[in-house]
Image 1 (cartoon, rainbow, N blue to C red):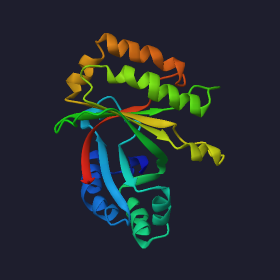
Image 2 (cartoon, rainbow, N blue to C red; image 1 turned 90 degrees about the vertical axis):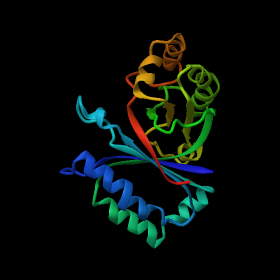
Image 3 (spheres, rainbow, N blue to C red; image 1 turned 135 degrees about the vertical axis):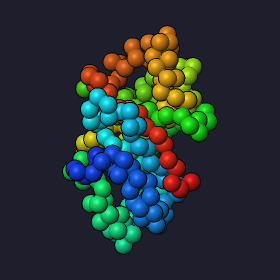
Image 4 (cartoon, rainbow, N blue to C red; image 1 turned 45 degrees about the horizontal axis):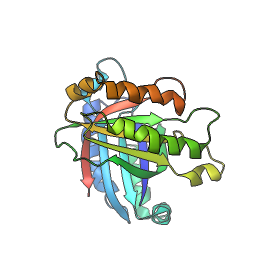
Length: 223
């Protein structure tokens, strides 16, 4: 299956609570009418994430389709036009970014029902080919991250190679998604030697600098 990952900020003047409520209810009902959609998940940035300022994104939507042909076909439908029209009611379209990805389950654990979901936006190391980046991320870095004891589930979503071959430069080269029982469990993970080894590997394939990330609560809209 093909997965599109969408990330954005809320419309100016709307509170975080209003944004989350509208997105989870009114807008979700509009999106679920898209023909061919197989699965739809919203991830809302935790309210605690706003204590020190604005996070990089207010949320992430993940939508699965049977293949890219099914995904492209949606673009010409009335239902998709309705989605775009409704976006103006709650999000800032100038901040909206998308990547079409292939999903790799690195650690196939259960999603904690009351847990938290960490989403990191990944960019490849300058001078490294996308193919080498994806191979290192999946085959070398993936097992390191999966070895962190408190990580319950770990999924990598790699931007599709076809995007690069078409001459486009995506916003990100992928997203790393990990689930934890709680934010406290996330803090515990950072004290482990497995975490240190995972972070030490990042300069081998990821661009220098701090990875943009949001800590979220997941809401499954369609499964």
